[in-house]
Image (tube, rainbow over all chains, first blue to last red; front, side, top):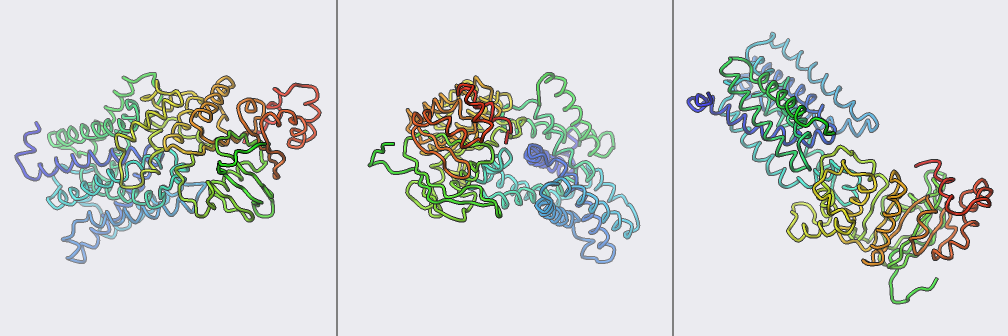
Length: 277
Length: 270
Protein backbone atom coordinates (compact mmCIF):
# COMPACT_ATOMS: atom_id res chain seq x y z
CA UNK A 1 0.00 0.00 0.00
CA UNK A 2 2.76 2.35 0.89
CA UNK A 3 4.90 1.40 -2.18
CA UNK A 4 2.96 3.71 -4.40
CA UNK A 5 4.37 6.63 -2.37
CA UNK A 6 7.82 5.80 -3.69
CA UNK A 7 6.72 5.46 -7.31
CA UNK A 8 5.75 9.09 -7.82
CA UNK A 9 7.87 12.04 -6.81
CA UNK A 10 4.98 14.12 -5.54
CA UNK A 11 3.88 11.32 -3.25
CA UNK A 12 7.42 10.78 -1.99
CA UNK A 13 7.58 14.46 -1.11
CA UNK A 14 4.34 14.29 0.80
CA UNK A 15 5.46 11.20 2.71
CA UNK A 16 8.79 12.74 3.74
CA UNK A 17 7.18 16.05 4.54
CA UNK A 18 4.63 14.21 6.61
CA UNK A 19 7.35 12.38 8.52
CA UNK A 20 9.10 15.65 9.36
CA UNK A 21 5.87 17.19 10.55
CA UNK A 22 5.00 14.07 12.49
CA UNK A 23 8.22 14.65 14.40
CA UNK A 24 8.13 18.42 14.94
CA UNK A 25 4.49 19.00 15.76
CA UNK A 26 4.15 16.48 18.62
CA UNK A 27 7.60 17.37 19.93
CA UNK A 28 6.79 21.05 20.39
CA UNK A 29 3.29 20.01 21.37
CA UNK A 30 4.67 18.38 24.54
CA UNK A 31 5.90 21.76 25.79
CA UNK A 32 2.63 23.43 24.77
CA UNK A 33 0.52 20.89 26.63
CA UNK A 34 2.50 20.93 29.88
CA UNK A 35 2.48 24.73 29.84
CA UNK A 36 -1.30 24.58 29.34
CA UNK A 37 -1.05 26.42 26.07
CA UNK A 38 -2.46 23.79 23.73
CA UNK A 39 -5.10 26.20 22.44
CA UNK A 40 -2.43 28.54 21.14
CA UNK A 41 -1.85 26.19 18.24
CA UNK A 42 -5.48 26.68 17.21
CA UNK A 43 -5.13 30.45 17.33
CA UNK A 44 -1.95 30.36 15.30
CA UNK A 45 -3.36 28.03 12.67
CA UNK A 46 -6.23 30.45 12.10
CA UNK A 47 -3.92 33.38 11.71
CA UNK A 48 -1.92 31.28 9.25
CA UNK A 49 -5.12 30.91 7.25
CA UNK A 50 -5.42 34.65 6.89
CA UNK A 51 -1.81 34.79 5.70
CA UNK A 52 -2.46 32.10 3.08
CA UNK A 53 -5.66 33.82 1.97
CA UNK A 54 -3.84 37.14 1.78
CA UNK A 55 -1.15 35.60 -0.40
CA UNK A 56 -3.76 34.01 -2.70
CA UNK A 57 -5.56 37.35 -2.92
CA UNK A 58 -2.38 39.23 -3.82
CA UNK A 59 -1.65 36.52 -6.36
CA UNK A 60 -4.74 37.57 -8.33
CA UNK A 61 -3.38 41.06 -8.84
CA UNK A 62 0.40 40.75 -8.74
CA UNK A 63 2.23 38.10 -10.70
CA UNK A 64 5.01 38.07 -8.10
CA UNK A 65 2.68 36.67 -5.46
CA UNK A 66 1.09 34.23 -7.89
CA UNK A 67 4.49 32.58 -8.17
CA UNK A 68 5.31 32.76 -4.49
CA UNK A 69 4.58 29.79 -2.26
CA UNK A 70 1.70 31.01 -0.04
CA UNK A 71 3.40 29.17 2.81
CA UNK A 72 5.80 32.11 3.23
CA UNK A 73 3.00 34.55 3.85
CA UNK A 74 1.30 32.03 6.11
CA UNK A 75 4.48 31.69 8.15
CA UNK A 76 4.91 35.46 8.35
CA UNK A 77 1.37 35.90 9.65
CA UNK A 78 1.76 33.01 12.08
CA UNK A 79 4.98 34.38 13.54
CA UNK A 80 3.45 37.87 13.77
CA UNK A 81 0.44 36.40 15.55
CA UNK A 82 2.70 34.46 17.91
CA UNK A 83 4.62 37.57 18.91
CA UNK A 84 1.36 39.42 19.41
CA UNK A 85 0.07 36.62 21.65
CA UNK A 86 3.19 36.89 23.82
CA UNK A 87 2.60 40.65 24.11
CA UNK A 88 -1.06 40.22 24.97
CA UNK A 89 -0.23 37.63 27.60
CA UNK A 90 1.96 40.18 29.31
CA UNK A 91 -0.64 42.95 29.00
CA UNK A 92 -3.43 40.79 30.44
CA UNK A 93 -1.42 39.20 33.21
CA UNK A 94 -4.44 37.85 35.00
CA UNK A 95 -6.35 36.78 31.90
CA UNK A 96 -3.57 35.18 29.92
CA UNK A 97 -5.90 32.91 27.93
CA UNK A 98 -7.64 35.99 26.52
CA UNK A 99 -4.87 36.33 23.94
CA UNK A 100 -6.03 33.10 22.28
CA UNK A 101 -9.60 34.08 21.27
CA UNK A 102 -8.36 37.50 20.22
CA UNK A 103 -5.85 36.07 17.76
CA UNK A 104 -8.16 33.27 16.70
CA UNK A 105 -11.01 35.57 15.70
CA UNK A 106 -8.63 38.06 14.14
CA UNK A 107 -7.23 35.22 12.02
CA UNK A 108 -10.63 33.92 10.89
CA UNK A 109 -12.00 37.44 10.41
CA UNK A 110 -9.14 38.61 8.23
CA UNK A 111 -9.06 35.25 6.45
CA UNK A 112 -12.74 35.43 5.51
CA UNK A 113 -12.36 39.01 4.24
CA UNK A 114 -9.40 38.07 2.07
CA UNK A 115 -11.15 34.96 0.75
CA UNK A 116 -14.27 36.97 -0.15
CA UNK A 117 -12.18 39.61 -1.88
CA UNK A 118 -10.43 36.88 -3.83
CA UNK A 119 -13.90 35.74 -5.03
CA UNK A 120 -14.55 32.86 -2.77
CA UNK A 121 -13.25 29.35 -2.28
CA UNK A 122 -11.32 27.41 -4.79
CA UNK A 123 -9.69 24.04 -4.75
CA UNK A 124 -6.39 25.40 -3.47
CA UNK A 125 -8.04 26.74 -0.40
CA UNK A 126 -9.79 23.48 0.32
CA UNK A 127 -6.37 21.82 0.33
CA UNK A 128 -5.08 24.36 2.80
CA UNK A 129 -8.04 23.85 5.10
CA UNK A 130 -7.94 20.06 5.27
CA UNK A 131 -4.55 19.08 3.88
CA UNK A 132 -3.68 17.25 0.71
CA UNK A 133 -1.67 14.20 -0.23
CA UNK A 134 -0.85 15.41 -3.69
CA UNK A 135 -0.47 19.18 -3.34
CA UNK A 136 2.94 19.10 -1.70
CA UNK A 137 5.58 20.48 -4.02
CA UNK A 138 9.31 20.27 -3.99
CA UNK A 139 9.52 23.82 -2.66
CA UNK A 140 7.31 22.85 0.32
CA UNK A 141 9.51 19.86 0.95
CA UNK A 142 12.68 21.97 0.93
CA UNK A 143 11.25 24.72 3.11
CA UNK A 144 9.95 22.24 5.68
CA UNK A 145 13.24 20.34 5.53
CA UNK A 146 15.17 23.46 6.49
CA UNK A 147 12.66 24.19 9.22
CA UNK A 148 13.09 20.67 10.62
CA UNK A 149 16.82 21.20 10.87
CA UNK A 150 16.40 24.58 12.59
CA UNK A 151 13.81 23.25 15.04
CA UNK A 152 15.95 20.22 15.88
CA UNK A 153 18.97 22.42 16.62
CA UNK A 154 16.85 24.69 18.82
CA UNK A 155 15.51 21.70 20.73
CA UNK A 156 19.01 20.35 21.35
CA UNK A 157 20.28 23.76 22.47
CA UNK A 158 17.39 24.82 24.68
CA UNK A 159 15.80 21.58 25.84
CA UNK A 160 16.88 21.98 29.45
CA UNK A 161 15.86 25.63 29.68
CA UNK A 162 12.45 25.00 28.11
CA UNK A 163 11.96 22.04 30.43
CA UNK A 164 12.82 24.08 33.53
CA UNK A 165 10.63 27.03 32.45
CA UNK A 166 7.70 24.70 31.79
CA UNK A 167 8.02 23.00 35.14
CA UNK A 168 8.72 25.90 37.47
CA UNK A 169 9.02 29.30 35.90
CA UNK A 170 9.91 31.22 39.09
CA UNK A 171 12.73 28.93 40.08
CA UNK A 172 14.03 28.88 36.52
CA UNK A 173 14.21 32.67 36.52
CA UNK A 174 15.96 32.73 39.92
CA UNK A 175 18.63 30.42 38.52
CA UNK A 176 19.33 32.89 35.73
CA UNK A 177 17.40 31.51 32.75
CA UNK A 178 16.27 34.32 30.38
CA UNK A 179 12.54 33.71 30.33
CA UNK A 180 11.40 36.32 27.81
CA UNK A 181 13.86 35.40 25.09
CA UNK A 182 13.23 31.68 25.43
CA UNK A 183 9.44 31.98 25.49
CA UNK A 184 9.53 34.15 22.40
CA UNK A 185 11.87 31.79 20.60
CA UNK A 186 9.64 28.88 21.47
CA UNK A 187 6.42 30.48 20.29
CA UNK A 188 8.09 31.49 17.01
CA UNK A 189 9.12 27.85 16.49
CA UNK A 190 5.55 26.77 17.15
CA UNK A 191 4.25 29.35 14.68
CA UNK A 192 6.60 28.11 11.96
CA UNK A 193 5.78 24.47 12.55
CA UNK A 194 2.06 25.17 12.45
CA UNK A 195 2.38 26.99 9.14
CA UNK A 196 4.50 24.14 7.80
CA UNK A 197 2.17 21.37 8.99
CA UNK A 198 -0.81 22.90 7.33
CA UNK A 199 0.10 21.57 3.88
CA UNK A 200 -0.33 18.02 5.09
CA UNK A 201 -2.87 18.21 7.92
CA UNK A 202 -4.73 21.37 6.96
CA UNK A 203 -5.28 24.57 8.90
CA UNK A 204 -8.35 23.38 10.73
CA UNK A 205 -6.65 20.26 12.01
CA UNK A 206 -3.05 21.33 12.61
CA UNK A 207 -3.53 21.70 16.31
CA UNK A 208 -4.66 18.09 16.55
CA UNK A 209 -1.19 16.90 15.58
CA UNK A 210 0.32 19.03 18.33
CA UNK A 211 -2.02 17.94 21.09
CA UNK A 212 -3.59 14.53 20.42
CA UNK A 213 -0.35 12.50 20.34
CA UNK A 214 0.70 14.31 23.52
CA UNK A 215 -2.62 13.57 25.17
CA UNK A 216 -2.00 9.87 24.48
CA UNK A 217 1.68 10.08 25.50
CA UNK A 218 0.86 11.59 28.89
CA UNK A 219 -1.00 8.36 29.74
CA UNK A 220 2.08 6.23 29.13
CA UNK A 221 5.11 8.35 29.91
CA UNK A 222 7.23 8.00 32.98
CA UNK A 223 9.09 11.25 33.06
CA UNK A 224 9.47 14.08 30.63
CA UNK A 225 11.84 12.45 28.13
CA UNK A 226 9.47 9.57 27.56
CA UNK A 227 6.76 12.08 26.73
CA UNK A 228 8.65 13.02 23.59
CA UNK A 229 9.32 9.43 22.61
CA UNK A 230 5.68 8.40 22.88
CA UNK A 231 4.32 11.62 21.37
CA UNK A 232 6.59 11.40 18.33
CA UNK A 233 5.87 7.68 17.80
CA UNK A 234 2.12 8.30 17.96
CA UNK A 235 2.48 11.36 15.73
CA UNK A 236 4.41 9.45 13.08
CA UNK A 237 2.01 6.50 13.12
CA UNK A 238 -0.91 8.85 12.61
CA UNK A 239 0.75 10.78 9.78
CA UNK A 240 1.86 7.72 7.82
CA UNK A 241 -1.35 5.74 8.18
CA UNK A 242 -3.33 8.93 7.64
CA UNK A 243 -1.54 9.81 4.41
CA UNK A 244 -1.62 6.30 2.97
CA UNK A 245 -5.26 5.68 3.78
CA UNK A 246 -6.25 9.15 2.56
CA UNK A 247 -4.57 8.47 -0.76
CA UNK A 248 -6.26 5.12 -1.26
CA UNK A 249 -9.66 6.29 -0.03
CA UNK A 250 -9.33 9.59 -1.87
CA UNK A 251 -10.18 11.75 1.17
CA UNK A 252 -8.43 14.73 2.75
CA UNK A 253 -5.44 13.48 4.83
CA UNK A 254 -6.17 15.92 7.70
CA UNK A 255 -9.32 14.04 8.52
CA UNK A 256 -7.66 10.63 8.40
CA UNK A 257 -4.72 11.78 10.54
CA UNK A 258 -7.06 13.08 13.20
CA UNK A 259 -9.11 9.87 13.14
CA UNK A 260 -5.98 7.75 13.63
CA UNK A 261 -4.90 10.02 16.49
CA UNK A 262 -8.28 9.72 18.15
CA UNK A 263 -8.07 5.94 17.79
CA UNK A 264 -4.60 5.89 19.42
CA UNK A 265 -5.90 8.09 22.21
CA UNK A 266 -8.93 5.87 22.85
CA UNK A 267 -6.77 2.74 22.91
CA UNK A 268 -4.33 4.46 25.28
CA UNK A 269 -7.12 5.50 27.59
CA UNK A 270 -8.54 2.00 27.62
CA UNK A 271 -5.18 0.33 28.27
CA UNK A 272 -4.09 2.75 31.00
CA UNK A 273 -7.35 2.72 32.92
CA UNK A 274 -7.11 3.68 36.55
CA UNK A 275 -3.95 5.68 36.08
CA UNK A 276 -4.17 9.37 36.86
CA UNK A 277 -3.05 11.68 34.13
CA UNK B 1 25.95 33.69 71.86
CA UNK B 2 29.57 32.75 71.45
CA UNK B 3 31.13 33.04 68.09
CA UNK B 4 34.15 31.35 66.64
CA UNK B 5 36.23 34.23 65.36
CA UNK B 6 37.84 32.59 62.36
CA UNK B 7 34.58 31.82 60.62
CA UNK B 8 33.11 34.45 58.28
CA UNK B 9 29.47 35.41 58.39
CA UNK B 10 27.38 33.76 55.74
CA UNK B 11 24.97 36.63 55.82
CA UNK B 12 25.23 40.14 57.24
CA UNK B 13 22.14 42.27 57.21
CA UNK B 14 22.47 45.86 58.37
CA UNK B 15 19.71 48.39 59.06
CA UNK B 16 17.55 46.80 56.44
CA UNK B 17 14.16 48.38 55.71
CA UNK B 18 11.68 47.67 52.96
CA UNK B 19 8.32 49.27 52.36
CA UNK B 20 5.55 48.53 49.92
CA UNK B 21 4.38 52.04 49.16
CA UNK B 22 3.91 53.69 52.53
CA UNK B 23 3.60 50.49 54.54
CA UNK B 24 6.83 49.29 56.08
CA UNK B 25 7.16 45.54 55.79
CA UNK B 26 10.47 45.31 57.62
CA UNK B 27 12.23 48.01 59.54
CA UNK B 28 15.80 48.38 60.64
CA UNK B 29 16.69 44.69 60.67
CA UNK B 30 20.19 43.79 61.83
CA UNK B 31 21.06 40.15 61.58
CA UNK B 32 24.30 38.24 61.24
CA UNK B 33 24.28 34.56 60.47
CA UNK B 34 27.21 32.30 61.28
CA UNK B 35 28.49 29.68 58.96
CA UNK B 36 27.21 26.26 59.92
CA UNK B 37 24.22 27.45 61.88
CA UNK B 38 20.66 26.29 61.48
CA UNK B 39 18.49 29.35 61.93
CA UNK B 40 14.76 29.26 62.45
CA UNK B 41 13.33 32.54 61.20
CA UNK B 42 9.93 32.86 62.77
CA UNK B 43 7.15 35.39 62.83
CA UNK B 44 3.40 35.51 62.25
CA UNK B 45 1.85 35.75 58.81
CA UNK B 46 2.51 39.13 57.28
CA UNK B 47 5.45 39.79 59.61
CA UNK B 48 7.88 40.51 56.78
CA UNK B 49 9.65 37.13 56.71
CA UNK B 50 9.15 36.68 53.00
CA UNK B 51 10.12 40.28 52.33
CA UNK B 52 13.36 39.70 54.20
CA UNK B 53 14.09 36.54 52.22
CA UNK B 54 13.31 38.23 48.93
CA UNK B 55 15.66 41.06 49.86
CA UNK B 56 18.40 38.55 50.64
CA UNK B 57 17.88 36.81 47.30
CA UNK B 58 17.96 40.10 45.43
CA UNK B 59 14.36 39.75 44.26
CA UNK B 60 13.49 43.00 46.05
CA UNK B 61 15.66 46.08 46.36
CA UNK B 62 15.39 47.48 49.88
CA UNK B 63 15.07 51.24 50.39
CA UNK B 64 17.52 51.27 53.27
CA UNK B 65 20.33 49.18 54.61
CA UNK B 66 22.66 46.59 53.17
CA UNK B 67 22.95 42.85 52.70
CA UNK B 68 26.23 41.02 52.42
CA UNK B 69 26.39 37.40 51.30
CA UNK B 70 29.60 35.52 52.02
CA UNK B 71 31.20 38.88 52.74
CA UNK B 72 30.19 40.42 49.40
CA UNK B 73 27.63 43.20 48.97
CA UNK B 74 24.50 41.92 47.29
CA UNK B 75 24.93 43.95 44.10
CA UNK B 76 28.38 42.47 43.55
CA UNK B 77 27.42 38.93 44.45
CA UNK B 78 27.30 36.65 41.39
CA UNK B 79 27.83 33.18 42.75
CA UNK B 80 24.16 32.30 43.11
CA UNK B 81 24.76 28.57 42.83
CA UNK B 82 26.18 28.76 46.37
CA UNK B 83 22.67 29.51 47.57
CA UNK B 84 19.89 26.99 47.43
CA UNK B 85 16.34 28.21 47.71
CA UNK B 86 13.23 26.14 48.27
CA UNK B 87 10.18 28.31 47.98
CA UNK B 88 6.81 27.89 49.53
CA UNK B 89 5.48 27.74 46.01
CA UNK B 90 7.38 24.55 45.34
CA UNK B 91 4.37 22.63 46.54
CA UNK B 92 1.90 24.48 44.34
CA UNK B 93 3.51 23.32 41.08
CA UNK B 94 1.48 21.50 38.47
CA UNK B 95 1.41 18.10 40.12
CA UNK B 96 0.33 16.36 36.93
CA UNK B 97 3.59 17.34 35.30
CA UNK B 98 5.19 14.24 33.84
CA UNK B 99 8.72 14.58 35.25
CA UNK B 100 10.59 11.96 37.23
CA UNK B 101 12.34 12.66 40.52
CA UNK B 102 15.64 12.44 38.64
CA UNK B 103 14.54 15.00 36.08
CA UNK B 104 13.27 17.44 38.70
CA UNK B 105 16.50 17.26 40.67
CA UNK B 106 18.59 17.70 37.51
CA UNK B 107 16.98 21.12 37.04
CA UNK B 108 18.93 22.29 40.06
CA UNK B 109 22.08 22.11 37.93
CA UNK B 110 20.76 23.93 34.86
CA UNK B 111 21.55 27.40 36.17
CA UNK B 112 25.03 26.35 37.25
CA UNK B 113 25.92 24.65 33.97
CA UNK B 114 24.65 27.56 31.92
CA UNK B 115 23.18 27.80 28.46
CA UNK B 116 24.48 25.77 25.51
CA UNK B 117 26.00 23.18 27.83
CA UNK B 118 24.88 19.68 28.67
CA UNK B 119 24.86 17.37 31.67
CA UNK B 120 27.99 15.27 31.95
CA UNK B 121 28.47 11.93 33.67
CA UNK B 122 29.82 13.74 36.71
CA UNK B 123 26.67 15.85 36.91
CA UNK B 124 24.59 12.69 36.75
CA UNK B 125 26.43 11.25 39.72
CA UNK B 126 25.81 14.43 41.67
CA UNK B 127 22.11 14.25 40.91
CA UNK B 128 21.92 10.71 42.27
CA UNK B 129 23.94 11.73 45.31
CA UNK B 130 21.56 14.59 46.10
CA UNK B 131 18.59 12.24 45.79
CA UNK B 132 20.26 9.84 48.22
CA UNK B 133 20.91 12.67 50.67
CA UNK B 134 17.20 13.30 51.05
CA UNK B 135 16.45 9.57 51.14
CA UNK B 136 14.44 9.42 47.93
CA UNK B 137 16.59 6.95 46.00
CA UNK B 138 13.79 4.39 45.85
CA UNK B 139 11.63 6.81 43.89
CA UNK B 140 14.20 8.03 41.37
CA UNK B 141 12.21 7.09 38.27
CA UNK B 142 8.77 7.87 39.65
CA UNK B 143 6.77 10.80 38.42
CA UNK B 144 6.82 13.63 40.94
CA UNK B 145 3.03 13.91 40.89
CA UNK B 146 2.68 10.42 42.37
CA UNK B 147 4.55 11.31 45.56
CA UNK B 148 3.15 12.66 48.82
CA UNK B 149 3.57 16.29 49.82
CA UNK B 150 6.44 15.50 52.17
CA UNK B 151 8.24 13.40 49.57
CA UNK B 152 7.81 16.11 46.95
CA UNK B 153 9.32 18.64 49.32
CA UNK B 154 12.32 16.33 49.80
CA UNK B 155 12.76 16.20 46.06
CA UNK B 156 12.77 20.00 45.93
CA UNK B 157 15.40 20.07 48.67
CA UNK B 158 17.48 17.67 46.60
CA UNK B 159 17.07 20.01 43.64
CA UNK B 160 18.44 22.82 45.80
CA UNK B 161 21.24 20.62 47.15
CA UNK B 162 22.50 19.33 43.83
CA UNK B 163 24.43 22.49 43.04
CA UNK B 164 26.17 22.02 46.41
CA UNK B 165 25.12 25.28 48.06
CA UNK B 166 26.77 26.53 51.23
CA UNK B 167 23.55 28.23 52.26
CA UNK B 168 20.12 26.73 51.95
CA UNK B 169 17.05 28.91 52.45
CA UNK B 170 13.67 27.27 52.93
CA UNK B 171 10.55 29.42 52.87
CA UNK B 172 7.70 27.68 54.70
CA UNK B 173 8.65 24.27 53.31
CA UNK B 174 6.21 22.32 55.42
CA UNK B 175 3.00 23.97 54.29
CA UNK B 176 0.77 21.14 53.09
CA UNK B 177 2.92 18.41 54.62
CA UNK B 178 1.30 16.13 57.21
CA UNK B 179 2.42 16.36 60.84
CA UNK B 180 4.36 13.09 61.02
CA UNK B 181 6.31 13.86 57.86
CA UNK B 182 7.15 17.30 59.22
CA UNK B 183 9.23 15.81 62.01
CA UNK B 184 11.06 13.46 59.62
CA UNK B 185 11.62 16.40 57.37
CA UNK B 186 13.16 18.52 60.14
CA UNK B 187 15.34 15.59 61.20
CA UNK B 188 16.67 15.38 57.66
CA UNK B 189 17.42 19.12 57.66
CA UNK B 190 19.25 18.77 60.94
CA UNK B 191 21.39 16.01 59.45
CA UNK B 192 22.24 18.13 56.43
CA UNK B 193 23.30 20.88 58.77
CA UNK B 194 25.38 18.68 61.07
CA UNK B 195 26.91 16.26 58.58
CA UNK B 196 27.33 18.42 55.50
CA UNK B 197 27.91 21.68 57.33
CA UNK B 198 25.36 23.50 55.20
CA UNK B 199 24.07 26.70 56.74
CA UNK B 200 20.29 26.60 56.86
CA UNK B 201 17.67 29.28 57.17
CA UNK B 202 14.23 27.87 57.80
CA UNK B 203 11.42 30.37 57.49
CA UNK B 204 8.27 29.31 59.29
CA UNK B 205 5.31 30.54 61.28
CA UNK B 206 5.20 27.24 63.11
CA UNK B 207 7.34 27.75 66.20
CA UNK B 208 6.41 24.61 68.10
CA UNK B 209 7.80 21.87 65.88
CA UNK B 210 10.86 23.73 64.64
CA UNK B 211 12.52 24.78 67.90
CA UNK B 212 13.81 21.30 68.80
CA UNK B 213 15.86 21.07 65.62
CA UNK B 214 17.43 24.48 65.02
CA UNK B 215 20.57 25.92 66.61
CA UNK B 216 19.46 29.56 66.47
CA UNK B 217 16.21 31.45 66.34
CA UNK B 218 15.36 34.87 64.98
CA UNK B 219 11.91 36.33 65.57
CA UNK B 220 10.65 39.09 63.40
CA UNK B 221 7.48 41.05 63.21
CA UNK B 222 8.44 44.05 61.16
CA UNK B 223 11.32 44.56 63.62
CA UNK B 224 13.77 41.94 64.78
CA UNK B 225 12.50 41.00 68.26
CA UNK B 226 14.92 38.26 69.13
CA UNK B 227 18.04 36.61 67.80
CA UNK B 228 19.92 34.03 69.79
CA UNK B 229 20.51 30.36 70.51
CA UNK B 230 17.65 27.90 70.47
CA UNK B 231 17.93 27.19 74.19
CA UNK B 232 17.88 30.85 75.06
CA UNK B 233 14.77 31.12 72.95
CA UNK B 234 13.07 28.31 74.88
CA UNK B 235 13.43 30.27 78.10
CA UNK B 236 11.98 33.42 76.66
CA UNK B 237 9.47 31.75 74.46
CA UNK B 238 6.27 32.88 76.20
CA UNK B 239 7.43 36.43 76.31
CA UNK B 240 8.39 36.30 72.64
CA UNK B 241 5.11 34.77 71.68
CA UNK B 242 3.10 37.56 73.18
CA UNK B 243 5.36 40.19 71.66
CA UNK B 244 5.04 38.58 68.27
CA UNK B 245 1.54 37.28 68.16
CA UNK B 246 -0.36 39.68 70.42
CA UNK B 247 -2.59 39.41 73.46
CA UNK B 248 -4.90 36.59 72.45
CA UNK B 249 -2.02 34.21 72.34
CA UNK B 250 -0.58 35.51 75.58
CA UNK B 251 -3.76 34.63 77.47
CA UNK B 252 -3.89 31.19 75.95
CA UNK B 253 -0.23 30.37 76.42
CA UNK B 254 -0.65 30.68 80.18
CA UNK B 255 -2.96 27.74 80.18
CA UNK B 256 -1.21 25.43 77.79
CA UNK B 257 2.19 24.03 77.26
CA UNK B 258 4.29 25.19 74.37
CA UNK B 259 3.50 22.34 72.04
CA UNK B 260 0.19 23.93 71.28
CA UNK B 261 1.46 27.23 70.03
CA UNK B 262 1.25 26.35 66.41
CA UNK B 263 -2.50 25.99 66.67
CA UNK B 264 -2.96 29.66 67.36
CA UNK B 265 -0.83 31.12 64.68
CA UNK B 266 -1.67 28.58 62.03
CA UNK B 267 -5.15 29.93 61.49
CA UNK B 268 -4.44 32.04 58.44
CA UNK B 269 -2.44 30.17 55.86
CA UNK B 270 -0.44 32.35 53.54
